[in-house]
Image 1 (cartoon, helix red, strand yellow):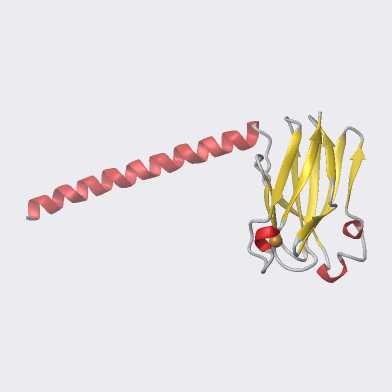
Image 2 (cartoon, helix red, strand yellow):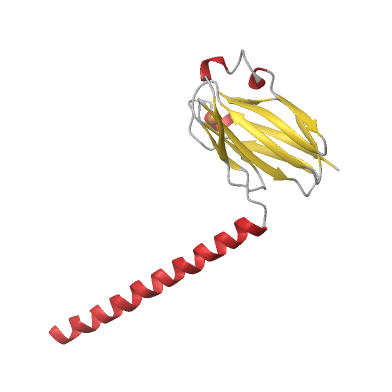
Length: 160
Ligand SMILES: [Cu+2]
């Protein structure tokens, strides 16, 4: 019995070593992808007074702006929808989204891309992406935000 327990301890040590080795491989691969595939990690760009989102500043006028060869989009995620109601981009051009909320927490997930952003009232999230395929991309809220959450859907259009 004692001998058996000793063997289990050895396997445990080997298993911990194997687990740490796998995590190390994972960290290296994630780091490599972040450096090479265009980093789409959202960042907090700014703070904002959530009670004034609808009346003052860039988000009171939700829009898509073309700046040089790129786009900037100011997006409101509210209960239960997104503004601007229509967003159009040309394929192959970089889009920088600024997203905030005038009420509760939402998310800005663009289907079939790795844009997946938590939208927190009082904060402005920033995320950049270059669409490589034309078409319609559904936008989905995947942070529970109230009774209409499941219907909080929009779309954006990428033109050829
Ligand atoms: Cu929502």
